[in-house]
Image 1 (tube, rainbow, N blue to C red):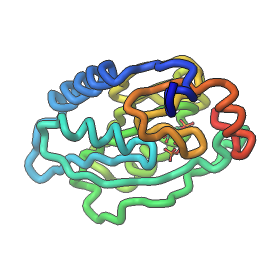
Image 2 (tube, helix red, strand yellow):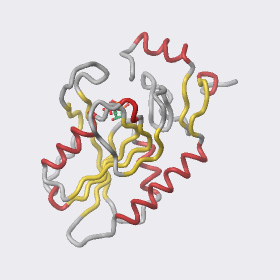
Image 3 (spheres, rainbow, N blue to C red):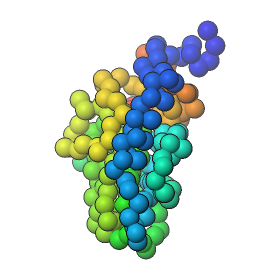
Length: 195
Ligand code: PRP
């Protein structure tokens, strides 16, 4: 077996199922987001993990929308710290009042990142803020947070692919996979562990 399949324990969501999930989410969004005069729909891609999901989702949207990027991290993520949101990249805009923001996320785990990020966007005065996530691990929640649109709930397994990484590897896989235990161990020995 060749790379990258040799590093996988199994495929959790294959390419065909990913396609179906993303098409269903796009249908829901297309129904909910009718164009409103003087308002703009802003697709906000949360880097890096949401890059592939955002691209696939946007290709299926029939509502006019702009695209922007944010890169944030929760301080103390993966530890007991409640921490704060750190901006690595945040849109410098002065039109928040006219924006219907749709935050696009690859996975929700503790919920800390998105609860803080949506709070921040609301505080900036956005006309509306909703969240679409490809994956959700509800069993990992530390704060009460629910996405408006959820692709698939998954168990508490370490997943990679379609944007999700293990020590920055495997983001380009066209499926969601679960790496072998020894592959995870080897990668996390050199980096701080994921969830
Ligand atoms: C992941 C994911 C979310 C966040 C979810 O990003 O893309 O942004 O973690 O975790 P939480 O619900 O516990 O806050 P990560 O920090 O791994 O960055 P990346 O997308 O650049 O890999």
